[in-house]
Every structure is written in C-alpha cells, then in structure tokens.
Image (tube, rainbow, N blue to C red; front, side, top):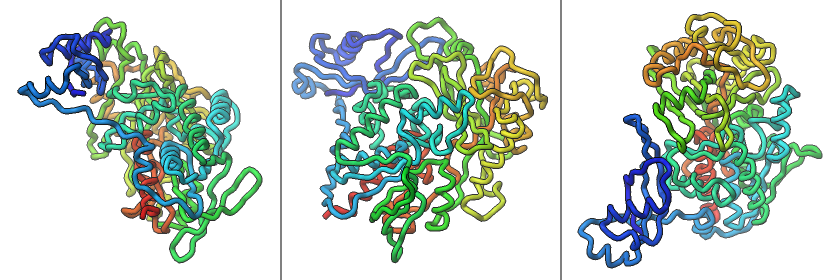
Amino acid sequence: MIKLNNLIFDEGFCEEDIKRESARVLGVKKEDVSDVVILRRSLDCRGRKATFVLSAGISLINEEEFLAASKQKYSPVEKVRTLEEIAREPGAVKGGKRPVVAGSGPAGLFCALTLAYAGFSPIVLERGDCVQERTKKVDAFSAGGELDEESNVQFGEGGAGTFSDGKLNTGVNNTLIATVLAEFVAHGAPEEIVYDSKPHIGTDKLIAVVSAMREKIISLGGEVRFRNKLTDIITEGGKLKGIKVAGREGEYTLDCDFCVIAIGHSARDTFGMLSRRVLMEQKPFAIGVRIEHLQSALNAERYGFKYKNLPPADYKVVAKTSDGRGCYSFCMCPGGYVVAAASENGGVVTNGMSRYARDGKNCNSALLVGVRPSDFGADDPLAGVRFQRKYEQAAFRLANGKAVCQRVGDFLEKRAGRGAGDVFPTYPRGVEYALLDDCLPAYVCGGLREALPQFDRKIKGFAFADALLTGVETRSSSPVRILRNEKGDSSVEGLMPCGEGAGYAGGITSAAADGIKTALNLLAKHTV
C-alpha cells in the first residue's frame, strides 16, 4: 500500500473521489486503484473556503510493477501494532503475586489491559462505581442532588476524561498513540478517530467503550473491584509488599509485589497518604474559568460561508501576559456543556463536555492562567492541592453552592452584572452572577483581562460582551508529581506511578500511552 499526502477535496467527498484523485496523482487509471484507506484527515478553512486535506493509503492492482517502473519513491503505509502484539512481545514469564492497578481512568485501563493481554491477570481497584452507576450519580448531582464524594465526574470507571467530551488529540509524539486509538476503535469507538486530526469520541459513546474495555480485561483473567480504594502501602526494605484497601465490606490487605498508581489528578486523600510514603514534588498547573459562546456565532466566524457537511467549529488560542504566565484555551468543547465537576462537598469545580454529535447550542472552553509552585507559599508537595481547594471553596461560598458567572463585558469592566444576555449558561446546578475577582487570584483575573482582547483580535467576537465566564476551573492537571525512575518505580520499588494524576500525562491519549509504558516496564521485570 502506497502512502499519498496532501490530497485535496471539497466537503462531501466519497471513496470513489479518493480513488479518482489518487489515480490522477499517480498517473494510472482509476480502475487500477483497488483499495484506499484514509490515514489522516484535516480541515483547512483558509481563504474562506473549506477543503479537506487527506493522507491516504492506496493499493494498486499491479503495485510491484508500478513501483519498479516509477521514477518517484513512495513510502509504504506502516502497520499499526495492536496492543495485544505489544503486550506479548516481551515474552514475560508469569508467576508470583497478581499485579494491582489502582485506578481505572485511561492510564489504569490501558495498563491493566496490556497486563491482561500478556497473561498477567491484573486486579484493578476503583474507588468509584462502574461507568453505568457512575453516570447515574453524575446525573443526579447535576440535577441538584447530593454529591457522592467517591463516584462523580472525577472518580469512577473511565476517569475524569469520561465526562469531558472524550477528546483524543494530543501534542505528544509517541508511537503508542496510534495503538491507543486503534484499541478504542476495537472496543466500539467511532472509526474516524484513527485518522481525524482532532479526534473525539463523545461522552455518550465513551461510556460504552470504557465498559467494553473492562469486560475485555475480565475475559482475559483480570478482575475489577469497584468501590475499593487504596488507603495505604506496606513496604519492607524499600520494596512493596502489599497494600491496604477500603472495600465494600471494610478494609483488607492485599499482598502484591507490584501496584500501579493511576489514581487521576483529583485523588487528594490518596496523595496525602502517598506523600508520607514516597517522594513527591509540587508541579505547576493552571486555573481559570469556562467561557461560553453561541456555537452558531463561532461557526460563522471560523467558516465565513455556507456549509452543509462541516463539523461544529472549534478553536485553540494562546496569549502572552505581562507577568509571563500566559493564558490559553484548554479542553474546547464544540456544541457542549459546562459540567459540575466537584469531588468534595463545599467546593465548586467546572469542566466541559460534549456528546458525540456536538449538537449543543453553546460551545465552551477553559481559559486558564499559569500557576507556579512559588504561588503556593509552602515547601510541601501538597501545597498545590490546598491552593486549588481554597479557590473552589471561595467560589462555593460566593455563589451559595452554585457556580460563579459573569458576562465578559461585565468582567472586563469589573462589575458583577445582573444576568445573561444572548448567551445562557449551561452549568446544570445554576449560577450566581458575581465578581470572579472574589474567587480567583488577582493575577489570574488580570491575565484573563489581558488575554481576552488578544483572543478577540484572532477570533472576532471572542470577547463578545454577552459571552459567559463560569468558574472556577481548577482541575486541568495534577498539582503534584510522584517521582519515578527509568524503570517506572517510585522511591518504593514495585510501586509504579503513571498517568495524569502522577504528573506524567495531560489528557486521555497521553495518559493511556503512559499506562501502556508502565505496564511494559512491569513486564520487563518478568522477562528472562
């Protein structure tokens, strides 16, 4: 199969169009093209005209003869290795105690699935519920019910990414990324995620994908224990000997030589326990707000022409600020909703999500300003956790348990305002219109005020007076890093941190890849 780049098509193209254009580029008859596979698809809207730019794999009926006669060299299409192939490659020798994976977000799921493919029957511990029960808890809280502090937007099967649109684009250059995407497809994700330049699954479809991955782990000999939380570790001579777990029936001890820590970025109680057992450090992160615009207005600005088959428009913006912190958009959700993402009573946390169709009236994105360890004011690895909690609780008090909301025009003029204009908030538990300055650091609000006019120059209408800012957004990444060596071990041998919560990833795809990497490090300890 030959790889061709920069094939250009208008919207509405089909397989026959790809065959026709490929034949033209190669100088052969369309009938000589036997098969095509899309490898990469991106949308180019420059010049007020939408075109799709493709890389494709092309099979020819007489491919060997064509390549031998051609004066131009063509690259072959590289085969994506399956996770099962990668897992079995080390030839690890089974035996000993079953490995444990604490956490079933993308890092934990892919780590456990890799171990299961290798025949190692992992035990997965998840403090929250299975994704079906977890969804009920999230829906109940969104509707105004009580927060379950063990099963919510942050905790439960699938991790925090399950309720954040399922965006899979990443800036990480890792050969495992293609394998991660292929594994998602194998468990029910839309096939286009393997070639879209900005792939996403959607929260509604991701729920089924996560469940299918769990069933695969179980079918391969693994075990998944819900409502089972890691509470302590047992060591001897610097090595892991076991862990303590709070289960449905009470606390118990689990003997193990290996425990993968894939607990996510919000497991603050577990961070507290680990800070007394292993080496950890503070890590910079970012906080801010969610901004909402009308999706139709963004479509009109980004595309600028009539269209039928184009996806809801998105954006990614970055601005410099005078203090050097910078401000940027994060987790942009076309046709999405602002969600209630608290994991502790007495605090407000916002996030964003979209369904697969991305058919909501509004779009939203986090607007974040950098936070440095020097802002925390303490030489303590958990100082960032306390920093996050401080502003989450301030927002809760200011908005009487709702979220704090402010129109962009009011925010720029430093006035609270009295309600919504053309854009209505989607935060499900209700909002209070108040000054965001009263629940965020001055340098964060200052950075947002510097950045919004810059963003408006890049995307006309971004600083539209009726656009909404809802806060606070504090959980974009982990405030800590659990130190590990080149073999994947923390300062306790056999205790292996991975994923976003441990400070080694930033999003679903990179966390999943780090989970695979950690599993391979574990398997290397069993390879002879």
